[in-house]
Image (tube, rainbow, N blue to C red; front, side, top):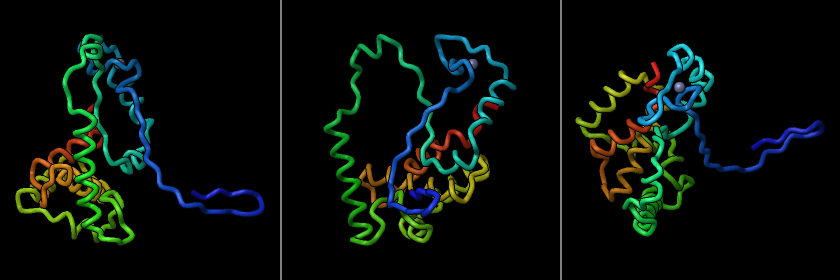
Length: 183
Ligand SMILES: [Zn+2]
């Protein structure tokens, strides 16, 4: 992070996680099963074009979060508990610590392009999935590497040595805003 003042400019180390949310359309009900969205396609287009492409490109994971009905909120539906999740994260982090073994890179997200090529090797089936996604979604080179790093993490959470098609498909599905679902 660089702070510039009249007399000097100082750069401090910074490592942050950005989490952002936006409505799917101006009224917020597009895709909602209980309320009707009356926005027109041009209105939705204009709304979505407000987010900058280069910014979206730099965000690792984009997902759609549907609204939750009150009875589901209050019902305590069974899901993965915190203790189980914690265990999975610990396993994934241990795998990353072993992978980078004391180097400057500590997490999959920090991998350089060269490390991404080294640690995210794909078999032929996965290569075909990625090639199809690149063409279909028009992914940038940056998004291509992000998909691989996210797939590597999904594989780590699954305690899998290799990236399998299901890991890669999940990572591709996390590039929702590249799909331009609103068009
Ligand atoms: Zn709407």
